[in-house]
Image (cartoon, rainbow, N blue to C red; front, side, top):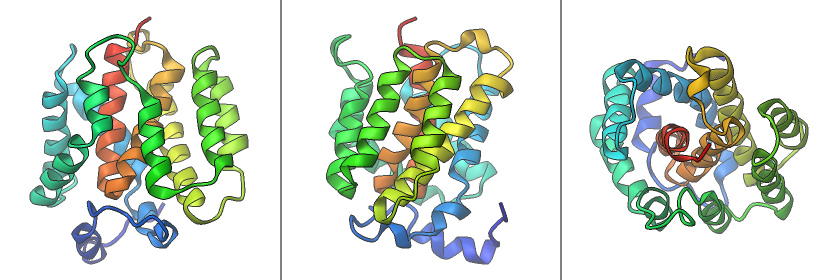
Length: 230
């Protein structure tokens, strides 16, 4: 994928964490330039290289902010505003401040928020939900094949097209990270679900633009690996 020029990057960053419109998501072709899946993996490796045991969500957010400002050179204020917006959502509170195991890591609240904001088709939401259902019982390769054949390769239009792009881009990059790149694969719990949580977080974060997608996909990835039961 071609790198965008620094001159082109500046105007994109000015809107990087604005809430994306419900009707015109397809017009936001800057999603491709942000290389969301690639950047997601870079963040995961950055966090991994910083520590070998779990950090709190606050500490993980801090490291994500460090990476985006010091390595990617994104505007610090825009990053902070984006973090503030996405952590203020009720879905985030449910995911990271759950009071019981039954509430813990409830990805379906995230998917419901995506549905309400972007008004996608029933078909694509059913495909995404089925992937999560498969993640409970299937190995990562089976889920990957399903995602490729039923989400990536479908001729989606409108908001469905962009949601499918971000979901599959992050899913496939996450698959490569957890199944190939990460040197300690035995540390991965519930591998299919962890990879899916990355992708689910990315489309929820997309409500706040490409940077929100990058931040939340990476944050859920770390949280899912640390907190999902064996």
